[in-house]
Image (cartoon, rainbow, N blue to C red; front, top):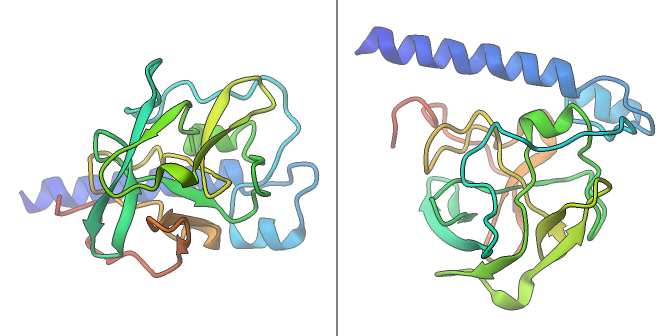
Length: 186
């Protein structure tokens, strides 16, 4: 069992390095601070989509956004318990995660409805540059992290210093995820 956990942790680490290498480069309009932090940058590349990488993407009837209690506090999750994130470099109501960034951070597709603990008044949508609809919460576009494998994983917390889980009040929770998050299953 220890070997299995070690392999999973190593694979997640390699995946994270590859994602940072793919998302941290010089997208147009990216500041040196964005590149230096390893955060995903905005890109003008056409055709970026969020096909794959995370299960639980929005459904035609609307994704249900609710909350879950974690070691980071109470956070927003989808109807399957998958953790939702915000990108600190997005503008209110506008996603800047495009191109390669979307492989690591697929958008939560809209429309959405409020589930247990989520505030319906804070839910909304925005139109992405590819014409798709992305769910927003307190005007911040919501994303999945492709490396999160199961409900409750928060492995995207703090990536590049710009990706954060979200409180039910719509605030980014900027604390560090516990070291065991994503490897022990709890």
